[in-house]
Length: 171
Image 1 (spheres, rainbow, N blue to C red):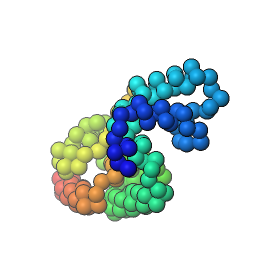
Image 2: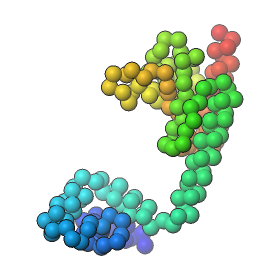
Image 3: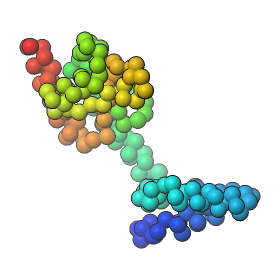
Image 4: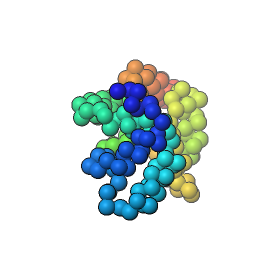
């Protein structure tokens, strides 16, 4: 089965374009020129390794994805609870792989970039400044922490953040 997923992308995409009823199939009532155009764009605008990953993912059963969902929800809940226990203001998260944390009470300067640089230098925990997603950087009160990590790494990060919070309280 794996060798099917490792073949060159062009034949796989041709099959996807020509097989009605399957994910990725182009409607059969489209003129041939439109189907060829769709094939052209699929072939030349999607990275080949992504095509392979999607093909593999389409063959996985629902149980895999339910298990992945349960795992990620568990990791999210562990990180959120741990951060809240440490006094961080964690926003609720229904999706994505990141928790957002409001840093207004931790960063009087109002610069999430500088805060994230200090955080990684002082605690060894990397966060993403949310303002990096805004052209004008007009949202500077939030940082993102990724929970799509092994539980041991999340636990280590929480321990580092606990030490960082203690050091800040003493200073």
